[in-house]
Amino acid sequence: MIRTQTVTAVIVVTSVTVATLAYISYKPKRKQDTDNDWENDTGDSATPDNSTSAPKVAERSQLHFVDSLDLPSHIRRQIKKDRLRKDKAKHLAMKGPMYDNIRMLDPQGELLSQVSLKKATWYVTKDLASWFDDNGRKSIKLRFEPKNRSSRGEKGSFVKSDKKNACVVCGGDEYFMRHYVVPYAYRTLFPKRFKSKLSHDIVILCPNCSLIAGQERQKRMDEIEDKCRGHDAEPKFIVDTELHRVRSKALALLRWKERIPAEKIEEYDNFVRRHLNLLDKSIDLTDEQLQSAIDVEPRVENPKYIPGAVIVAAYLGNDEEKIAAFVRDWRIHFIETMHPQHLPIGWGVDSSVECGSD
Image (cartoon, rainbow, N blue to C red; front, top):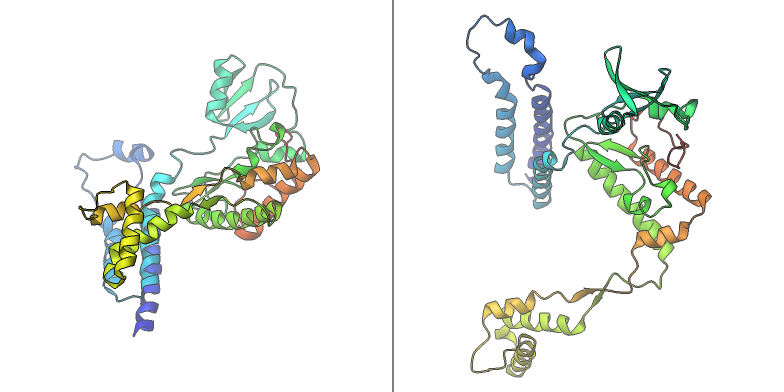
């Protein structure tokens, strides 16, 4: 019976996902996208089409059906996690597009790169460039001859290419967030020429792909850091044995007092009282006081602990060959674990790892 319900739940959860995607793809057009329709309206008042909510109603009914099933606890937990993750996606996602795709041209009209609206506005505000209509495409044209012409040739295809504001793995464009192919914890400790303004290794992922990529990235980080740290490294936390004893004795008094011998009760009581500074034995310890002793955190941060990112950065040092190999290994890891199908034109494992070199 449980197996039948489990299979049914899997089918229903899949159906819920499909219904959700159908609802997302069925979103009505925004008013600014349908100006002509509004202008050509005959004057009849617009009445909301109740059919647009049909997928959402179907989704709710399927969710209620799942809730009514007597499912194993691990499946119910997974369903709950999926719902919470979906609800949080809109709040965790980027509030605006990552790529504005503003074309930056040199004085002769040759395309140098695609830049953000913020950067383009800065050039114009500083009177270093002017807005330019490039066949209906918003662009800026520089008022000076740039010294850096790294965008020429094959390497320039990435900085020149249009970037889609969509997940590079699955192509989803409902919600998206930044993903650092080379973990930010490492990149921020690199020498400046390897970390400043390098957009190649920052890609867009949807919430689901971001979760998977984050898990895969953390596994590899742990492996690298364990290898660099060695077996005799200091742990991140050390246990305060005194606080650990306070916690265990208070827990015993609160939950199993009736099973403990009288002499042990007195020993535990005195020990907890000393910690709480409640030495008047004429007043019994309350459940709240015992709970406060249970809530102490026996683990404390080890002042001698060195974060893994610092150890890895120290191992790499300023060795350009080591850093380049390290970055490329992370790019390979991203491709092998996520199998991205929508990477920007020009993105590649062997692209330069230094800023300003693409």
